[in-house]
Image 1 (cartoon, helix red, strand yellow):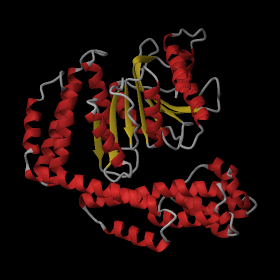
Image 2 (cartoon, helix red, strand yellow; image 1 turned 90 degrees about the horizontal axis):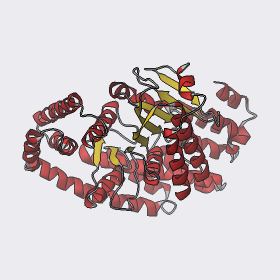
Image 3 (cartoon, one colour; image 1 turned 120 degrees about the vertical axis):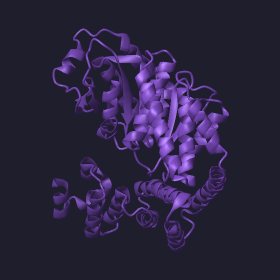
Image 4 (cartoon, one colour; image 1 turned 30 degrees about the vertical axis):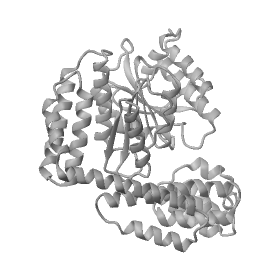
Length: 454
């Protein structure tokens, strides 16, 4: 961490440097404003690229807040496309790394991040007081690692993965996000509770979804909150219209949810009310929402919901521990029963917990099966792929792992069919297909050649 921190501090120092060849002007000769620029090559290493969005009002004579986005699979376009509308409205630059991804060695990740920061700070007009990071899953861990390791990061939006607080202050604003059916929901909920106990201001936003990038409205709300924090800290002039719009939007959502009068909706209304109050403290009068929050917290349905949720989260943690102890020791038939029981839940919070536990099994299998394949432990790989493809049948990684196993145990034709399944469900890493040593036995087959051509 110390090595990474020093490198990043050097990169941030580049913000105030004046470049002789004016790379900012060179970039604007071809980069489009108000549109997504798919691949910007780094000058010092053209093999490294990033996806870029410049707001329509971008000029090199001004400075703009920037959001660095990290996707776990190195697809910078996904977060940039998700953020671009909000970035356009609020005047943000967005950069999505195409190289930072899960599974990299620390020294390689260090090199990628250093190159990314150096290149963007050289070519773009960045407001050094408003540097933000956003990431999903492994990308969120990268964002948190960077923010903890350097000074100069103003805020982090961490989706579906967090960090371990090491002190009683952070030095940056933290907004945690998770889907209600995300296997990492419990981790993010616990992080929120830990930060609250340390009296470290933070927010936790839950959206309806699984382990995935959040929807656009959730990300937009989080970025708007960062803008309001900048106003509160006098980093930027007070934007009364932005604050009024945010307050009005939150009020509308709260009233709509209250009108449904069921426990889930009332709890969600209460959650929105509490984070609105915290966000607007010191910049707007939120007495009306405080009154609504007090009223909601006193409702029996809300109190019952929180009590029930607390019990279910304890159950979820116990089941996670049980599953961890059962990997490798329980037979396939035991897992069949567990997966069937979890899939039987059809509605409500119990359904969300079951979905999260199914995701927990899937993520664990991903880790175990890859380790088994790398060690050529075909028996272990067979055990974990059988669970993996059953618990998460539309996950391309499970079918890819199964193809790797089959390619190495004398089943090349079946392996080709598994590869087709992986591609059907979203696998698209052509370079991995061509270079993965676990697929060596398939590369002479005509069907494999057809797959790579397509």
